[in-house]
Every structure is written in structure tokens, then in C-alpha cells.
Picture 1: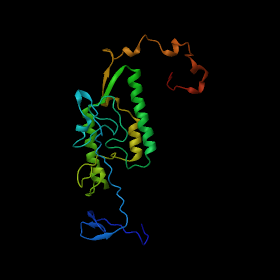
Picture 2 (picture 1 turned 135 degrees about the vertical axis):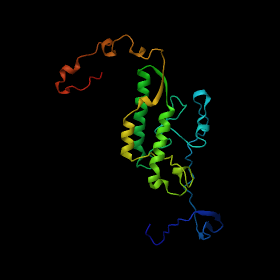
Picture 3 (picture 1 turned 30 degrees about the vertical axis):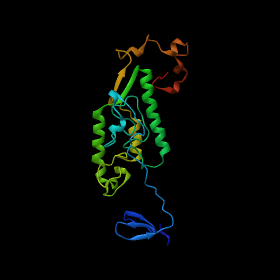
Picture 4 (picture 1 turned 90 degrees about the vertical axis):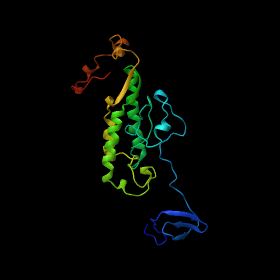
Length: 227
């Protein structure tokens, strides 16, 4: 940035002309190559129809403002997960650790559904509304809300910041580690929620495995016995 052949221009481009670019201020800059790197679409509208509860199309839901739950799920979309949806840690360092945390979250949700007799789950509308309100109250005191057109705000100069997580990277990790199952609507396969308990025996017992393994591990102390 400090090299003599580098110039930072903050004025927006008004037009691309024959010799280069013309700025809003009227100044023209001659260039040899113009590289456009701001054309990515962060509207979160799917490129193809995604139909959820009662035929709801996610494309229509996200038309005005994309709203979701913790950046991974959306209202009216049962059994639906996405990586880096609205209000995700998109400006919080490397994406790879975030992918890992999101994947772990998904696996834990799927494990609960498969082992406890649920055929579908989707985020409730109230938790989504509260999460969005929290984010909208958080961002005005940050640089992300500066009056300048940016992808954080869907290409607008002013408006809500719906691209980023309302907090730090560590803050987001802690949030994702604590699953709030109560924020979801769960639909059971059976009319009795406890039907998944089955015949009252553990697979470890049925398969004749050691059910007192902890007796040989005195150092285990009082930790939970997980089979």
C-alpha cells in the first residue's frame, strides 16, 4: 500500500470509459487492466427452487431480506441445513474451522433425530425473530454499519447487516457448541415421544457386550457412563 506505484482511490466508479474509469467526482483514471472483484452475489437466494413446509419456496422467502437461524437453517424448511447462511462468521478468519463447527452442529442434530424417533425438525419463528433483533441491535455500534455500499448489507449503503455473525469468532464458536434444541419444532415418527425407548434394553445388553466396563477403570471417577 505504501509503494510509489500504488494509489488508493475511495471515490466510487461512475462509468467505465475507453481510456479507463471515470469516478463520481468526474476524475478519469487511465488503466491497462480492470479487474472486477466485487461481483459475488450474497443475497442467499438459491439458484434453484427449494420447497419447504406448505410449498414455501426459499427463493421467495429470501427475496426481500434473507433471515435464518444462526446462519445454518431457515424457517419453514424442515431438515434443512446450509453452510454460511445469513449472519454467519464470514469476516471472522479462516473458513475451515467454521466448517468443522457447523458440521459438528449438523451431526448432533441429525443424531438426535435418528436416535430419538423424530422425522423432521425446523427452527421456530420466535427464536429466529429474536436472533435477528439481537443482530440488528448489535451492528449499529460496529464499523460494519458505516454508510457505504457493501456486501455486508446486500449491496446497500444503509440498512441491516445480515451477512455477518453479531460477535467475535470465539463468541460464535461458543454459541455453536451449545445447541438449543428448544428453538426447533420437532415432529415425532410415533404419537408417543418416548416410543424410541423401545423394549427397555440397551444394545450393549442385547449384543452381550461388557456392561460394567467402568469397574476396570477406577480413574474414571464419577463421569457419566456413556455406552
